[in-house]
Length: 88
Image 1: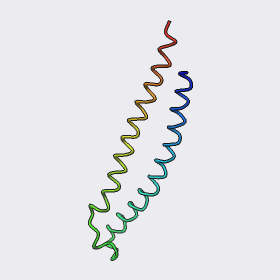
Image 2 (image 1 turned 90 degrees about the vertical axis):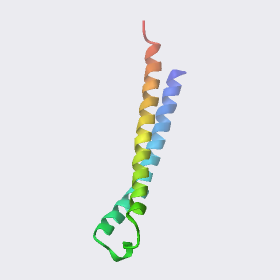
Image 3 (image 1 turned 45 degrees about the vertical axis):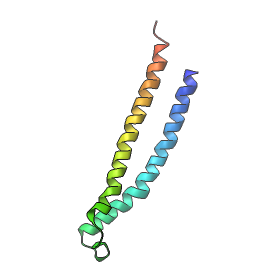
Image 4 (image 1 turned 120 degrees about the vertical axis):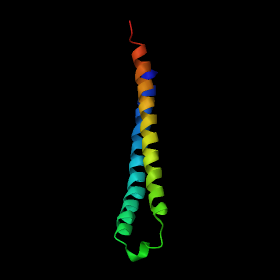
């Protein structure tokens, strides 16, 4: 049963890793491009505030950090449960 739990955790982590990578590409790359363009004073971005450009990136960084911490905690708790059964 513990092996099944570990397998499920790893499978879910793999899928959510892919979803996070997609979010990083879909949100992160255009946001970075817009920040670079605004720093070069492109005429189309003069009316856009810096907060509107930085907010999606800061949210994405927060999401990445929270995801890392949650995965680390889940994987450690799963490893601890598996190791408890092997203690003699």
